[in-house]
Length: 127
Image (cartoon, rainbow, N blue to C red; front, top):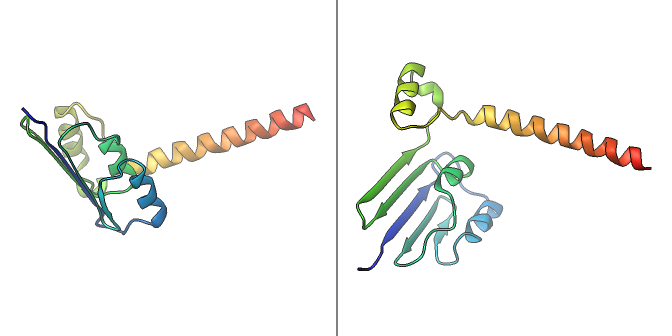
């Protein structure tokens, strides 16, 4: 029995930059990549990327289908469009957490600032 997997990602809000398309190309040399999409089919092997990560970084919609009866559909929408109670119920039902990209960006920026300050103090202490 052969294996079949289909991955498709769409960028709706904005087109991908040349740098983003290059990052996607590093994940697959056979994928069809445009400024608004990434599509790949596998008859053997697996996709090297993480669909959740690609959705956070680049895309607004994702479809995955495999011949062993797995089908996944993801859509990224602003968290404000869903009442918080509904979002929490959906997340708990799926075993997920509510993901607010803005909070993740704040945490990452703060960690970079702390790291930069720490590196600066270490370098000054050695001189």
